[in-house]
Amino acid sequence: MADEANETSESESVVDPAIVTLIGKVNSLHEECIKIRQSTSEAGELDLLEKAEAKCKMCLQLLETGQAAAGKKAVLFKVLQHYSQALLDETYVLECRLVNADFPEDRCKGDIRHLIGQLDQPEELVKEMLGSEYKSGQILGSDILECLFWRRGALFYMYCHTLFNDPQRRQLDTTHIRQCAESGVKYLEAMLCVRSPLMMDAMTDVSAKNEDMMQLLKEGIFSDTHLLALMYSGELCYWHWKIVKETTTDQSVKESSDADENCSGNFNSVSNGRRLLQKFMNIVQDCFKGRGWDCSRAEQILAEFPEC
Image (cartoon, rainbow, N blue to C red; front, top):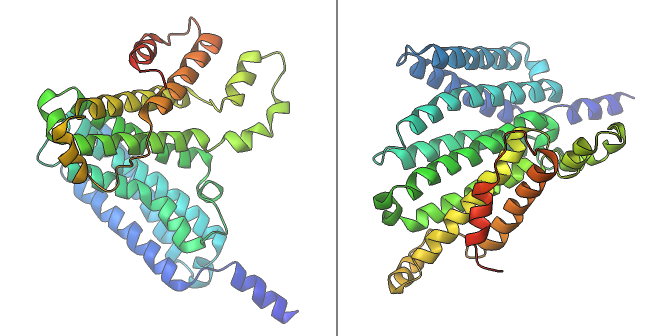
């Protein structure tokens, strides 16, 4: 019996180095929140930063009060959730500043790397601390995980929108724009997949009379944000295709040889774009007709895409 109790205790615990790592991450985020707060007087920013700081303090309290309790997985799960929420609040402040400044050329690449790196951390910590035993959605929850994917995908969308519509910047670094467009699509499609497998089992709970709701759930559309993710993904594919088309010259042969290795040569912007935009249009026309959603941009892009 004693051996069984010890095995249970060990299975519920996480090794101390993992706790030390998490405490370091939380402290670092807390310090960054304080630094940003000292540089602003804007009420909206202050409110988000105060919320983030409060969540960081809550995390530290959970981790530092009672070392025996600190190793329990239940506590760790709660800390990872609070930490993720604090990250979302803090990075939103920095993201809005970057967007409002139209992604300044002198620092936008570094700022985006920093933001994406921060928003990657919750999933990385789950893998590092819990291995393959749990999936990120089980620990963080569907809402938090979807938000993490959405924020990264939407950031790449806004960045690519700025670069694509600025002729000078558009020509300076075409490989960079292509890579960012691919990353944006990856994150947005991941967001669209978070809840689909889980919700399909619950379809019988939805009233058969609500056909629109049934159709939306079948398509994995649980909010306006999910629908917007389809449109954003399709437009990112369009920009990717346009950049590739414009740089298919002798000049681009050299450029592609020096390309960022993260830019995938297997990304089919036309087929992916057609699939995403057609799904967007079908859902809007079937379930959202007369509710303020417009398909004109999607129709324009689909008409411009070549046949696959």
